[in-house]
Image (cartoon, rainbow, N blue to C red; front, side, top):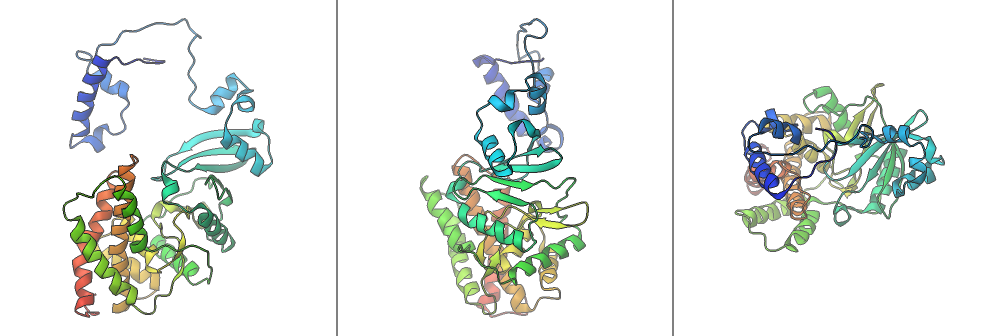
Length: 379
């Protein structure tokens, strides 16, 4: 089975039924998630009928990469209409014929990215994902990228177009992400957050879990009423918690990443650590970054408290711990509503919707009780 394939309606209807049964299988992630459609077809020859059409050798060619295509047609890059290539040559001052090493990079929930090289220098090009213009202030992101680069927090940044959102960065070969189960790496990540929080850096943008969550909610309502059991009750509790948290003293607004999850760290072979993807950056609560790290690491309560202590470089005070747990709840709610809107747009984030929601639902009553009883010891 090589080459192009045509599915007629009868084949498609049968294939969909088989595919749905596979996806519903409790062993889907373990056994089937990475299978190609050809594998499913090969297992079901009795009910999936397909005819073969042979072609002479060399008439149908398959290219698995741009580099393979260029071996066949060296003039391809020079002739193809591609704004991304135009952007690259304009920024890097090179010729299209010098570009090579193209392959996709799949990490992340929102954007499309690919690797490329100019000579021996490797880069990453990012193209904004579907619907991101509703959530992302690209001018603010560019400002944040620039500040983070100047602070030495993001060594990868090269250029970003503040209007269209495309971006070029240095590629870090053999890089790894922060391991949320490695206490030494988590401690580095938390201390790095504190470094840029206390840097005095400022950009002309803000980010607040509650206020921005309401913004995502307004977008969501544009698709119709929110008929989700328990949504209004959770929203009311989150609103009360936000009032308490906002009234806390001693947590000044600072320069925050706000999407501070393990995948947004690159640790190079030399041990250097960069924080990338400053799309949600803005002046915000210092607890925002620890909260997002906790949520996206899927920490339990003990692990979350350890991360909070690592941020302060000591055991957090009861007031500090209560405040940072409030940010976890507010962050869970914010990213939950964001995920609902993404889902409504047709660009859902899968299981992450339920993960985000769980941190709001699981902890909101507990943290509210700490505030309403003025209980700073139980925290």
